[in-house]
Image (cartoon, rainbow, N blue to C red; front, side, top):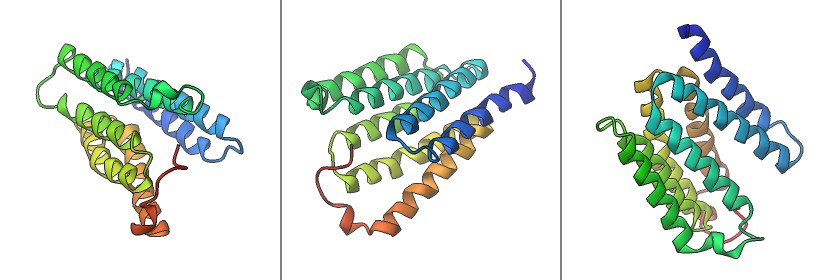
Length: 176
């Protein structure tokens, strides 16, 4: 496939992420983000970045589960979190491509642990640790849409910390 078309796929995914923040309902916001993630899965597959593609699929699964956390209490259990990390680890081993494969593992792994805390400060901290891993991975596999998307995410995380204040984020509940 033509390089411009492959990169275009990534920029279409970015457009879905940007559009997601323009949606009135959370349902549409999450749907557009799910579509954006799915498009990145396709782009990563075309780029041969299989660890990244599968880690994004785990990311999608994790986020879908977290959306049902109130309806399905088992989702919030430590065992569910460990199951997601175990699946992520198995896929990383299966698609091993040297140290590069550690970047999606670290990113999705650390953010998964953060999301299970239900604490905005810990979630932001996990995102601050995971996001640079994803950004570096995107650059190294040449997903320029992915790099743009992750740069926007990183700036957004930092802005939220300054906006709400680091200490004010240290509260339980209401984050998911």
